[in-house]
Image 1: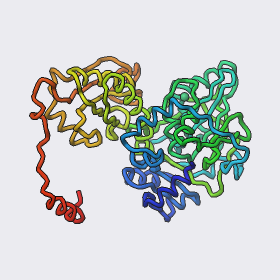
Image 2 (image 1 turned 120 degrees about the vertical axis):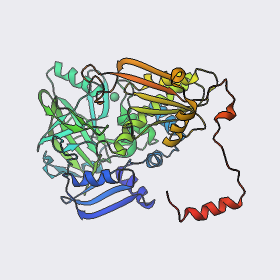
Image 3 (image 1 turned 90 degrees about the vertical axis):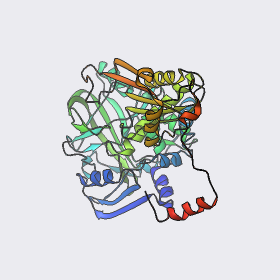
Image 4 (image 1 turned 30 degrees about the vertical axis):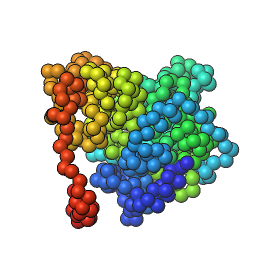
Length: 447
Ligand code: MN
């Protein structure tokens, strides 16, 4: 139930490509990762003498393999894990503490990703913090900018970790945290999900892993971390010190602005022997899937409450895995499509454009979705526009100061009052013989 375990499973399936050449953490790893971000896992053998893995969760099917589920059941799995929390076992000795280093970030191959990024960034760090006073534990992912060998700036969007930090800040106390790098995909997905405040996301990860997650207590700070993580940075988020953080390319592939943000002071670093540094390149397919899948699950759950059958939900990669959704439903009554759109827009507040289609349209096939819009949608009847609603802070076309945006819903389901046959995609009948010919031609003709 570790990154290593998952990598060796993927190795057997031919999903890992090794790069033996020496590659720089400055622009070279990120360039290669983005070039092949739709493809296999890239495993760099020599990045300043260290091993680096990227694009681990770069495909929906790999994520399904990691969770031992299918595309069809993925959302149900994610939702049910949020409702069946399992506290992980805490172990005394852990691979992630095999080697203990000085609190010096200098030896870690932290990547600099894009041209105008503010510097090297850790983007795969899973951050645990707790407040004994509130009785709350929290796990989430935050980007961390390297300021010097023992200091990071942390981007805290006003969500759960921000709330823990402000609670400590009021008492003038630093917040102790563990930052885990190199974890099983289930841990990343759980940390990227947003259960109510107070739910420990490690319990979700453990449920996804059927009880396979183990935690270990940190050495210098009051925090826990996965026992099989590759690398653990122990530190405190200062209650008072802040620094200018950014700019950094975020999920949409555009630069997020600079802001004053809290800093993390590193207290200790532990790792596995010959650790693998896991990197996630911002705006890569992997980044979009990891952020998007838990939101797809929320959309799936919300739409399921207003229409009886939801077939598929996808936050498209081109929409940043964040702003564009496609939902397929079995429509029973006129108006079901619009209810589905309203539920989807409410379930994921950053969602900007949503398209709902019938069950015969594959949500993963963008051409089919566009075809449905072309043949089943009329703007005067099937379009919803909602003005001045809360949206994503990242969308440069929105009112970013007040975080207001306009949202669009496109109901591309067939109208019920017209004959179904008019909307059917024409088929060519099978002859048996021709299917065999197609199979043999496929070997020579590739898309
Ligand atoms: Mn949380």
